[in-house]
Length: 395
Image (cartoon, rainbow, N blue to C red; front, top):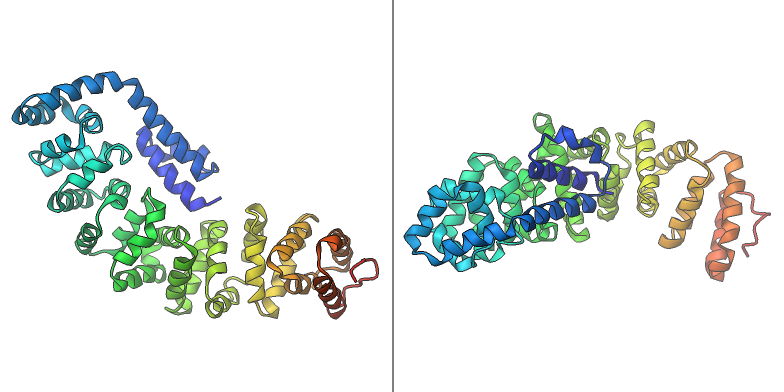
């Protein structure tokens, strides 16, 4: 489960309920998908309950002359009803009315709009209107509203809006609140490379510590290819940035989010990260393995261990002994899936002798699943690493 995604959804839910986020902190361990479904279902339920009333108002606004429609929306219906009927009106009519409304009023309406119901309306607004509304929302630091709609905007509008935002921290805030996560890769390609580079450098600035989790959220919510590009870009800035990322993941408990990212890095950069002294601290490694165990991320963990030097694998082994016996079951399955038996056994040989026997008993369960070549290699590894193999049937 992505803790960062859950945090973003929790913020959006608190905004939808108009309550302080502290009042719904008890939902923090819910999967982000569940929180998102709850939020959208709640919005739909409220809209359905008032649908007849909104349609009645929308009918009046649609058929009266334009100047009367503008006056009704601006001065008679009020902000709440105007927001609700925006989704009930035909998009062309709503866009026509919007041309005559003050940009501040449009920004107020945008805050309550549901992008699912107003996709066509957003497309019909002029670039100048969109940019003006975005500037008002930026002045108000309403990143959540911008994030809800940025995935619907044309590339050129995104470029123009981004160019008007001098602070990369504000860009991070917007990306953190994007609803259309599948659009983040594309949005990154739309932005100038130097903006992305400066954004990644935020992690080396201790004065901007509050933004570090949101930077990590950016890296977590992109495709594997983009994870590699951004991760390599961050790591190329030097050890200070690598340590900053590790400290942020540790202090905010984000290892479930970060492990898959590190597993996607290029091998050279991955080696720099997994052998960094900050990661090899015993307490940090315990938290890393706890995240791997809790999130079923042992496949990623073995990928990282493959890039570790002896010192790193020794720390992994020291941390494993605090876990229940069944952790070896998870490691063995991950080794089977990723063909990382050599790495897994190199870690096992560093465990106490009684763990060796547990490992052998688990390996017996896989005898019939392994081809002869793999079984032979495992037996050779068992002998090479000094793990007694007399009780196994691996041949």
